Length: 302
Image 1 (tube, rainbow, N blue to C red):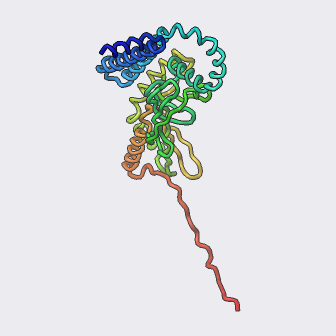
Image 2 (tube, rainbow, N blue to C red):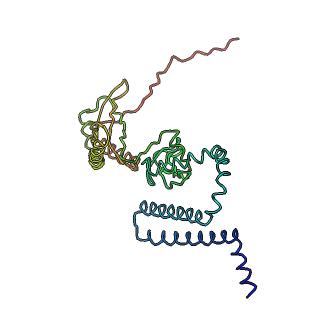
Image 3 (tube, helix red, strand yellow):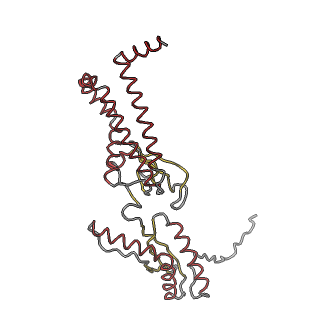
């Protein structure tokens, strides 16, 4: 037992080994406290976005405390490394320029309002929902690609935060979580166009009025913050024609995450109303007529 106590005493008596041991114990305590605080503080938070941000904030504070503590433990050694770090700084900055740019991007994302967890964005040509924002990369649950419509395709994509300085950032759900969408309906010549107009207006109002009212309230708030003109969020029906048929376009406002389901409901209701019109309104379709030619006279040449 005495030998063990002597070994431990010699270990801590050594300046370098003592500081390393102290730093390890300190970091272990900080990590344990951070984990405990994360579990305790977020236990009763029901909103998953708020819970996520709280856990991230606690972890960041823990990292900061750990870094400052290590600086205190090794403070007498840091002054000797100043010259070495100054010489190596330029080379490190050049080698890690992408990492530094990504860290700068993380700071810009965190405080610049580019996007947050839960937003639907497009970064570097990749569209998806933000599920995590790290110091170096943003993680997206990807949408689209071989899947039609705004649906998940199963891939998780990590995009460097430096992308925000290089390419546009499209946010589908930031200040204005609504989109304008359009559905075209081809109508056969000879149909009752006035009845068609009324039919489409009724269906669009029935399906999209609630979205339009909410979108209008949010747009009004945006006009206070930004120099935006008044925009109509109510459903709009327009008509054009060509040599084939009359095309009606239903323009409507929809939440960014309800685009495909709303289009499905609109299509189903429009078809039901057209069927119920008893021939007054008919869907147009491309038709091909084949005219018979004169029979080909094939004679055997001898």
